[in-house]
Length: 203
Ligand code: NI
Image (tube, rainbow, N blue to C red; front, side):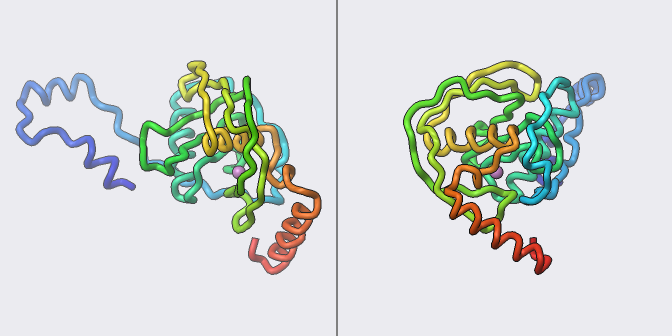
Protein backbone atom coordinates (compact mmCIF):
# COMPACT_ATOMS: atom_id res chain seq x y z
CA UNK A 1 0.00 0.00 0.00
CA UNK A 2 2.59 2.71 0.88
CA UNK A 3 4.31 2.14 -2.45
CA UNK A 4 1.32 3.17 -4.51
CA UNK A 5 0.48 6.29 -2.52
CA UNK A 6 4.01 7.68 -2.56
CA UNK A 7 5.18 6.85 -6.07
CA UNK A 8 2.14 8.22 -7.89
CA UNK A 9 2.65 11.74 -6.54
CA UNK A 10 6.34 12.16 -7.38
CA UNK A 11 7.15 15.46 -9.10
CA UNK A 12 9.16 15.46 -12.33
CA UNK A 13 12.90 15.23 -11.64
CA UNK A 14 13.72 18.52 -13.41
CA UNK A 15 11.73 20.67 -10.99
CA UNK A 16 13.02 24.24 -10.96
CA UNK A 17 13.50 26.40 -7.89
CA UNK A 18 10.34 28.27 -8.83
CA UNK A 19 8.36 25.06 -8.83
CA UNK A 20 9.82 24.09 -5.49
CA UNK A 21 8.79 27.44 -4.06
CA UNK A 22 5.31 26.89 -5.43
CA UNK A 23 5.29 23.47 -3.88
CA UNK A 24 6.16 24.99 -0.52
CA UNK A 25 3.50 27.69 -0.90
CA UNK A 26 0.77 25.15 -1.70
CA UNK A 27 1.85 21.88 -0.20
CA UNK A 28 -0.05 18.86 -1.36
CA UNK A 29 -1.77 17.15 1.53
CA UNK A 30 0.12 13.92 2.00
CA UNK A 31 -2.13 10.91 1.55
CA UNK A 32 -2.76 9.35 4.93
CA UNK A 33 -2.02 5.66 5.15
CA UNK A 34 -5.25 3.71 4.89
CA UNK A 35 -6.56 1.67 7.74
CA UNK A 36 -7.75 -1.85 7.09
CA UNK A 37 -10.59 -2.64 9.45
CA UNK A 38 -11.42 -6.17 10.52
CA UNK A 39 -14.89 -7.21 9.31
CA UNK A 40 -17.52 -7.82 11.98
CA UNK A 41 -19.12 -11.24 11.64
CA UNK A 42 -22.70 -12.47 11.98
CA UNK A 43 -23.62 -12.76 15.65
CA UNK A 44 -22.46 -9.27 16.55
CA UNK A 45 -25.62 -7.28 17.41
CA UNK A 46 -24.30 -4.17 15.59
CA UNK A 47 -25.11 -5.92 12.29
CA UNK A 48 -28.77 -6.14 13.22
CA UNK A 49 -29.51 -2.62 14.31
CA UNK A 50 -30.16 0.40 12.09
CA UNK A 51 -27.29 2.87 11.74
CA UNK A 52 -27.45 6.54 12.68
CA UNK A 53 -27.64 9.13 9.90
CA UNK A 54 -24.36 10.67 8.79
CA UNK A 55 -24.55 14.30 9.87
CA UNK A 56 -20.94 15.48 9.90
CA UNK A 57 -19.20 15.58 6.54
CA UNK A 58 -15.57 16.41 7.16
CA UNK A 59 -12.06 15.17 6.41
CA UNK A 60 -12.49 12.34 8.92
CA UNK A 61 -15.54 11.06 7.08
CA UNK A 62 -13.69 11.18 3.74
CA UNK A 63 -10.83 9.26 5.33
CA UNK A 64 -13.27 6.74 6.79
CA UNK A 65 -14.77 6.16 3.33
CA UNK A 66 -11.27 5.58 1.87
CA UNK A 67 -10.46 3.19 4.73
CA UNK A 68 -13.70 1.35 4.01
CA UNK A 69 -12.76 0.95 0.34
CA UNK A 70 -9.35 -0.39 1.36
CA UNK A 71 -10.93 -2.75 3.88
CA UNK A 72 -13.45 -3.93 1.29
CA UNK A 73 -10.75 -4.57 -1.34
CA UNK A 74 -8.62 -6.40 1.23
CA UNK A 75 -11.60 -8.66 1.96
CA UNK A 76 -12.35 -9.02 -1.77
CA UNK A 77 -15.85 -7.62 -1.51
CA UNK A 78 -17.85 -5.35 -3.81
CA UNK A 79 -19.67 -3.53 -1.03
CA UNK A 80 -19.10 -2.70 2.62
CA UNK A 81 -21.35 -0.96 5.14
CA UNK A 82 -20.13 0.87 8.25
CA UNK A 83 -21.83 -1.54 10.71
CA UNK A 84 -19.58 -4.24 9.22
CA UNK A 85 -16.56 -2.44 10.65
CA UNK A 86 -18.30 -1.83 13.96
CA UNK A 87 -19.71 1.65 13.25
CA UNK A 88 -23.46 2.10 13.51
CA UNK A 89 -23.59 4.71 10.79
CA UNK A 90 -25.55 5.07 7.53
CA UNK A 91 -22.45 4.93 5.37
CA UNK A 92 -21.49 2.33 2.78
CA UNK A 93 -19.05 1.94 -0.10
CA UNK A 94 -19.64 0.02 -3.31
CA UNK A 95 -17.35 -0.92 -6.19
CA UNK A 96 -18.64 -3.73 -8.37
CA UNK A 97 -15.35 -3.72 -10.33
CA UNK A 98 -13.53 -4.72 -7.10
CA UNK A 99 -10.92 -1.97 -7.54
CA UNK A 100 -10.30 -2.40 -11.27
CA UNK A 101 -11.90 0.91 -12.22
CA UNK A 102 -11.30 3.86 -9.84
CA UNK A 103 -14.34 5.60 -11.34
CA UNK A 104 -16.58 2.80 -10.12
CA UNK A 105 -16.01 3.75 -6.47
CA UNK A 106 -19.30 4.90 -4.95
CA UNK A 107 -19.66 6.34 -1.46
CA UNK A 108 -23.19 6.17 -0.11
CA UNK A 109 -24.03 8.32 2.88
CA UNK A 110 -27.65 8.18 4.03
CA UNK A 111 -28.76 6.27 0.90
CA UNK A 112 -32.42 5.59 0.13
CA UNK A 113 -34.07 3.65 -2.66
CA UNK A 114 -36.37 5.95 -4.61
CA UNK A 115 -37.29 3.60 -7.45
CA UNK A 116 -37.08 -0.12 -8.07
CA UNK A 117 -38.03 -2.14 -11.11
CA UNK A 118 -37.97 -5.77 -12.19
CA UNK A 119 -36.81 -8.82 -10.29
CA UNK A 120 -33.68 -10.95 -10.48
CA UNK A 121 -33.01 -14.01 -8.36
CA UNK A 122 -29.28 -14.46 -7.96
CA UNK A 123 -26.84 -15.91 -5.47
CA UNK A 124 -25.54 -13.47 -2.92
CA UNK A 125 -22.98 -13.47 -0.13
CA UNK A 126 -21.79 -11.10 2.57
CA UNK A 127 -18.36 -10.34 4.03
CA UNK A 128 -19.92 -10.66 7.49
CA UNK A 129 -21.19 -14.17 6.73
CA UNK A 130 -18.13 -15.68 5.04
CA UNK A 131 -18.50 -19.08 3.42
CA UNK A 132 -22.27 -18.94 3.03
CA UNK A 133 -24.32 -17.86 0.05
CA UNK A 134 -27.96 -17.93 -0.87
CA UNK A 135 -30.35 -16.96 -3.66
CA UNK A 136 -32.00 -13.61 -3.05
CA UNK A 137 -34.62 -11.86 -5.16
CA UNK A 138 -33.62 -8.25 -5.81
CA UNK A 139 -34.86 -5.57 -8.19
CA UNK A 140 -33.15 -5.58 -11.60
CA UNK A 141 -32.93 -1.78 -11.58
CA UNK A 142 -32.85 0.56 -8.64
CA UNK A 143 -32.46 4.29 -8.40
CA UNK A 144 -31.14 5.58 -5.12
CA UNK A 145 -30.49 8.98 -3.68
CA UNK A 146 -27.61 9.49 -1.31
CA UNK A 147 -24.87 11.92 -0.34
CA UNK A 148 -21.22 11.51 -1.23
CA UNK A 149 -18.36 11.79 1.29
CA UNK A 150 -18.52 15.59 1.00
CA UNK A 151 -22.23 15.64 1.77
CA UNK A 152 -23.27 16.48 -1.80
CA UNK A 153 -26.58 14.85 -2.76
CA UNK A 154 -26.77 12.70 -5.89
CA UNK A 155 -28.94 10.09 -7.53
CA UNK A 156 -27.66 6.98 -9.22
CA UNK A 157 -29.29 4.13 -11.08
CA UNK A 158 -27.91 0.63 -10.89
CA UNK A 159 -28.65 -2.48 -12.89
CA UNK A 160 -28.18 -6.15 -11.95
CA UNK A 161 -25.08 -6.56 -9.73
CA UNK A 162 -24.91 -2.83 -8.96
CA UNK A 163 -28.63 -2.75 -8.11
CA UNK A 164 -28.09 -5.82 -5.92
CA UNK A 165 -25.12 -4.21 -4.17
CA UNK A 166 -27.10 -1.03 -3.47
CA UNK A 167 -29.97 -3.05 -1.98
CA UNK A 168 -27.64 -5.28 0.04
CA UNK A 169 -25.73 -2.31 1.51
CA UNK A 170 -28.87 -0.28 2.25
CA UNK A 171 -30.23 -3.38 4.00
CA UNK A 172 -27.09 -3.39 6.18
CA UNK A 173 -27.73 0.22 7.17
CA UNK A 174 -31.20 -0.88 8.29
CA UNK A 175 -29.84 -3.81 10.28
CA UNK A 176 -30.96 -6.38 7.72
CA UNK A 177 -28.75 -9.22 6.48
CA UNK A 178 -29.28 -11.26 3.32
CA UNK A 179 -30.18 -14.23 5.55
CA UNK A 180 -33.49 -12.52 6.20
CA UNK A 181 -34.37 -12.83 2.52
CA UNK A 182 -33.82 -16.60 2.46
CA UNK A 183 -36.40 -19.27 3.20
CA UNK A 184 -36.69 -20.09 6.90
CA UNK A 185 -35.29 -23.54 6.16
CA UNK A 186 -32.17 -22.25 4.43
CA UNK A 187 -31.70 -19.48 6.99
CA UNK A 188 -31.90 -21.87 9.94
CA UNK A 189 -29.49 -24.26 8.25
CA UNK A 190 -26.89 -21.49 7.87
CA UNK A 191 -27.45 -20.26 11.42
CA UNK A 192 -26.99 -23.78 12.79
CA UNK A 193 -23.74 -24.19 10.86
CA UNK A 194 -22.48 -20.84 12.16
CA UNK A 195 -23.37 -21.86 15.72
CA UNK A 196 -21.34 -25.01 15.25
CA UNK A 197 -18.37 -23.03 13.87
CA UNK A 198 -18.60 -20.66 16.82
CA UNK A 199 -18.43 -23.57 19.26
CA UNK A 200 -15.30 -24.77 17.48
CA UNK A 201 -13.83 -21.29 17.76
CA UNK A 202 -13.81 -20.97 13.97
CA UNK A 203 -16.19 -18.01 13.71
NI1 NI B 1 -23.04 -7.74 3.40
